[in-house]
Structures are given as structure tokens and as C-alpha cells.
Image (tube, rainbow, N blue to C red; front, side, top):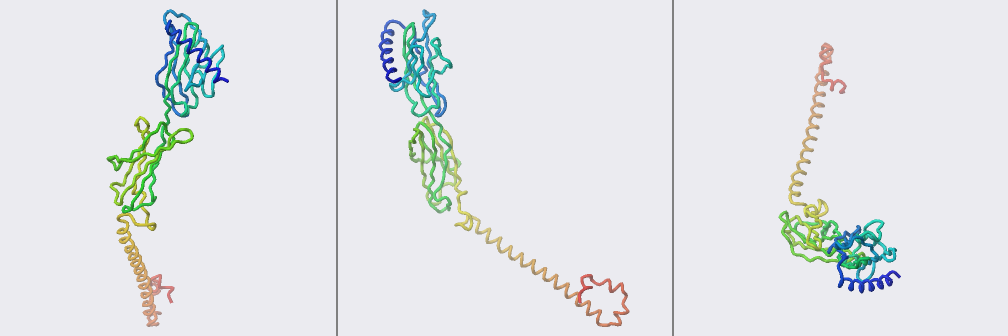
Length: 314
């Protein structure tokens, strides 16, 4: 109902405006040529009514906002009709308010495009157009390798992906700390909400030219949204799961024998200490038992001075 009545009102206004423009420029609708809106946020199309010096007081009679031929907001006969998410930017707007800016809530990709605002007042009529550029920042890129665990002599495919951006952007690959650029293609897929999902692959030959690879996501104006860096050395197979990292085999071959030899030496020393103590005690008892008479005549203090470890030895 609003669409049909809005179109009829638009036609009447168009005829009226053309006639008024030929006669006078007392009233002008001035709009900002371009407006930028963030996806999911509020966006405003900035438009206002200006008058010549001859006009002292203006009353707005009709306002019609259209996008792609369809009205999204109308004001007529003191009544405001709007479609969901569209409204006057000024709270509690009235026919005496010359700010006719349009506010869009929860901006979507479908809101991108050209809008036209037509105004009729008691001092004349005019219309103007403006554009809304909807943007959405891409998510931070994510890089993963195939296979996930690699070796320096294996072929590796790196895949980079970034989601939820608009308009269509690109992914770029850079090699090493100096970030030498690599030429690759970006695959773009449009989602149900109109946003883009980007992906790109980079194939590395065995013996890779670097162990560090960076993926950067660029928006539609070639500005950098975000980046991610992958260090392939962190993807090298761990010991026991595949080929060891450089230097691992040498360290293992050196450390393992040293540990075994050290354990043997310690065990041998302990055995020698125990054996020596045992032999000493047996020798002492033989000497004491050799001459019972000497043993009886021996000073008790001398007997007590024997090694304490030997006193209880049979």
C-alpha cells in the first residue's frame, strides 16, 4: 500500500518540482554526495533544506525518500510512513524541521546504492540525490598448511582465508621478513547476506625459499584490513612422529650414551664402596679371633674403637 501511494505521490511531486524549478529557486534540497555506512551499524544520509533570503519561514508539506524506485520513507498530510529500519535522523521530526536526513538502522549490503530525496514546501519544491557506500571489515586472515605437519624437504600448500567483508577485497602473499610479494589469485564467494568470503592458496616446493609466510587481506580500496603470519618451523614434525628437526639426531646420539655410561659408573662406585666395607669388617674379625688370649687382654676401649659398621658384623 505504501509503495503504490508513494509512487503516485512521487509522480505528482516530480511534475510539481519541474514546474517550480523553472520559476524559482527559493527552496533547495542539499545532500552530501557520498555517505559511508558500516555493515550492521547505523548509517545516515545527510540532507537538509535551504532557502533563499526572500523566504522567512518554511513549512514542509511533503517528503519522499526513494531507493531504486521504491519509497522507503514518506511524509504527507502530517503523517510519516516508513519501511523497517528507515526513519528521519532527527528525533521527533516535525514539518518545521528543515533537516530531512535519512537514518538507516542495522545497515545491510542491500542498502548500498543511490537514494533520492524530494521535498515540497509552502515556498517551493526541490529534489536531490545522494549515495550510500556500505563497507564491512574483513576478519583477520587464517593460514593453515597441508599437510599440517611438514618437513623441510616436503611440498607444502598454504591456504589463507578471510570472511565477512564488503565490497569484494583481495588476499596477498608475502615471503620472509622482507615481505617479498608473491603473485596469487583470490577466490571470492558471496554469502547469503551479501558479504564476501575470500581464500587463496600458495604452493611451496621442497626446500622452501623461506620459513615465514604472511597473508594480508586488502579491502576494495586496497587498504589493509588485517594480516596473519605462519612460521613453518613450528609445523615441523615432532620426534617420534616423523623426521627430526635439524640437529635433533646429533643431540640425541650424544646425550643418550653419556647418560648410560654415567649410570654404569655410579653403579660401579657404589658396588666398590659396599664391597670394600665388607672386606674390611671380615678382616678385623679374623684378627680379633686369631688370638683369643690377646683379644681377652685387649683394652675394652680398643675393641669399642673398631669401625661401628663392623661391630654387629658376624
